[in-house]
Length: 499
Image 1: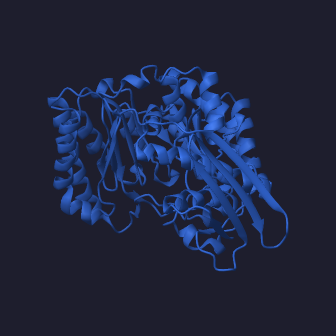
Image 2 (image 1 turned 90 degrees about the vertical axis):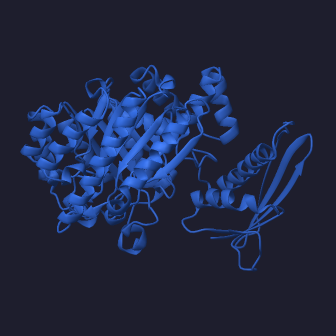
Image 3 (image 1 turned 45 degrees about the vertical axis):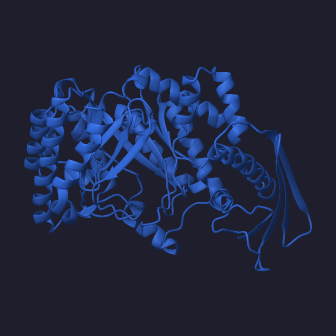
C-alpha cells in the first residue's frame, strides 16, 4: 500500500505516520513525495496558533469517495520545542488514525499508541493524583484507546499494586536478570540470544566462567553499598540447557555472591523447553529453594511444534509439568502463543482444553510477532498465519478462558509487527504473580543484566531517567570482554546510586 502524504513538511512526522499505517496494511510505504502510483493520497491542513487544528482528506486511487476528518485542541504555551512538537504530533496522528479507520472499517483498539508499555502511562497518571475516571478519560482522548483496553490496563494496575504494594517505592533496590544463551534448537520466531547447545560445550564452559565473575563482582558492589535485590530471573535462551552440575554451581555462586539471598522476594528459572527438564535438574532447584519455573508448551498441536523448530513432543510437555509438580515446583508458568503457523480457532481451542487439565499458577498469552531477525520473518511465505479477525477471536477466547478459570491479568506488553495489533498478557492466580515481570514492565527500578546477551536497564532512583547497557549477544565476544562489561556496569551503578 503506497501512501502519499502532502501538507506536512517536517520529516519528524514520517516515522510515526508509517507506524500508524502499518497497523492497517500488511505492507505500507508512507512518503512525502508523489510518484503518481500511490494507492492513497492524503492531504493535511495543519494550523498551529491558539489552537492546534488538523484537517485531513483521504482519496483512494480506485474510487472517487473522499474521506475527511478534523480535530482541534488548545495549544499549551510555555512548553519546550520538543514538548510543543509532541502535542502537534498527537493531533496529526489522531486524525490520521481516524481517517484510516473510516476508510478500512478497522478499529484500532490501542488507538495511536504504538509503545510497548501501556500500563506505565496509567500508573503515571494515577501517581500524579488523577482519579481513575480522569486518567481513563485522558487515555481515551489523548490516544483514542477503546474502553475495553483501558479497563484491561486498570485491572492490571490494580493487580500489580495488590501483588507489590510498594511498587513505587522500590527504586532504591535492584533486580537481577541472568542470561543463559543456549537452547536445544532455535525456534523459528525467536530473536533472543540463543545458540544451539550441542557441540558448543567449550563455549558453555567459557561463558559460565565469565558469568560467575560478573555475579561475584556485582554481588560484591551490592553488598558494599547496602543495595537489596528484589528479584532474580534466569532467562535466555533456556537456563536449563546447561547440566545439573553447572546449574548447581551457578546457584551456589548466587548464594555466596549476592546479598541476603534468603530474603529475595522471588527467584525464577525459565525452564521453558520441556526437553531440557530432568529429575536431576529439578533436584538442584529444590536444593536451592527455587520453586518458580516456566514449562512452555506454546501449542498442544504436534505439527505446529515441528513447524516452529521445537523438538519436544506435546506428551513431553505434559510429562515434564507433572514431574515438576511432583518435585515441589509450586509456581509453574506456561506460555501460549496465538497465531502460530497453520493454527486457527480450532487448534487454539484444543490448546486451551489441554491447559485446563494442568492449570499452572500463571499463564502468559503471547500474540505472535514477526520480529525482524527471526527465521519466520525471513521466510514469511513458508509460514501461513491466521488473519487479524481470527487472531482477535483467539485473543477473546483466551480472555474468556482465563476469567472462567480464576486467572487475573497482571502484566501486559506490546510489540512491533504483532499480529492484529494486539498484546501479550500475563495471567496468574491471585498471589502467584511474577514480581520480576511487573518490575521489568513498569520500569520502577534498575534491572542489572548478567551473562551473554543480557541487557541492563538502569533507572535513576529520583528522576526515573533510563540508561541501557547490553552485553554482547554471542558467547565468543562475551568471553573475550566480560571483565570490561562488568566494570562498565559498576561505573554506571556507582554514578546512579551516588556512592
